[in-house]
Image 1 (tube, rainbow, N blue to C red):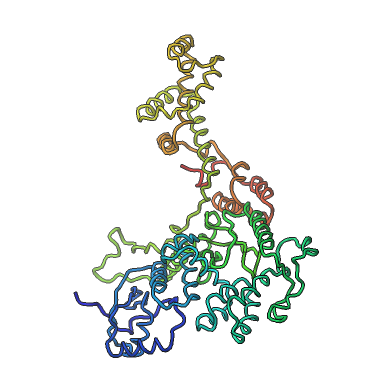
Image 2: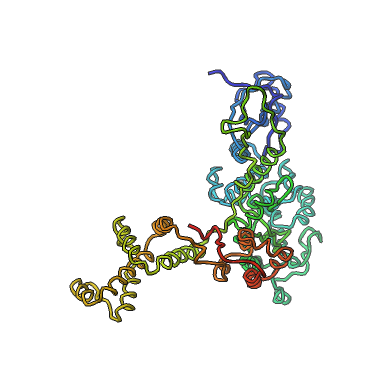
Length: 554
């Protein structure tokens, strides 16, 4: 089979995790390509028209362009990849090759962690690294640009960069020239930097007890002169413990507001993104509203030296989903703005009629997932609502109760009938303790009851079955019965208390409360959670009847 090729002029460079190319090695590659051509094909993906993008093989592309120009027939492997798949492939391909700088590996690793939704174990598996290696690389993401550049061009060692990452970027940039000029060793730098990382001026915990602490050093004369002397804690373990307690307290205070709150560390750069409505990274207004109820929407608390304790609201922690939503919005806008194609003579507009077919991307509503996160508490509330509503809807219909009970036994679910519930109903109907384990005594007890009581016991047995049925079978029965939840539920405090304030925004949109509140909507959601609940349940002129959120439906 002949190797496929493409003219270089139809290929453009994609995002390359490598930013530093050793000049001598690059010159060698250019000369090799000039003499032998490119022997190993590059990976490309198709774009619009006859254009392609490099996924892996950026150095070979550069060498071929330099050696032979844009008409060179470049050997390629064409893969159909979306933006996310292309990025992942490029990162893995480059990291698995030799001679990649640790700083570039760090950037690539951070992106893969983002694509893995923050799962560092999975990212380490993809790279074939140990978890320790991954974490050490990710720690470099707190290095300043100048430190990463110095590591790239081999002015400092990896050990230097790992130590500097514990400092603020401002202090890194102050110390770096001293390390380079004086050629300080890694052990020397370690001794000097470790205590400087615990700057009391940036501490986020209560420092009352620190004033008289023997580990409080107001000067650090051994620290590169006076360059980073700010007053430090020399008891690193104590400092870190107090910092973690303060970070967790900040995170805890936010958990009633949003579904997810995370303390972000060095290397978590790509595990979150600020949710945007407009612009190149915007998901659109309707999707942004829906995102407030997503289980991956929330707030970040910074655990980084430069922004320790700072809170970032409106964060999306599923960057892959975010990229897809942004792409869907852009595609929908392009489709909506594209000029309508005229129908020529002899052509039909559509097989289904005179209306032209509509591109699926032009339907942004299909990309919107307006739901509240299904937490365990919400699921438990929902199932309890179904059981209660179904019992109430059946009421005293003995014929229907008999039919459903026979159906449950016939389907093989008799063991799911709740004995505890049924025995409690027996006591209520007969004022007697139920005979247990002895069938003869049970038969005698039943024979002494009236026909009316026995009929009610059949109804009680169905209610016991409804209580005990597994959720999947309960759902089947609710659907067959055509249970109308709007007759049995309306918005209540006990439901709203189960969800976060951001999820309440989704409910407000879904039920029409946002529109009813009008200009007061933002004002209401600026209050505490109890105050928001109270306001949502007392909207003047709003009819709460007949409105059930999607998360409670079966």
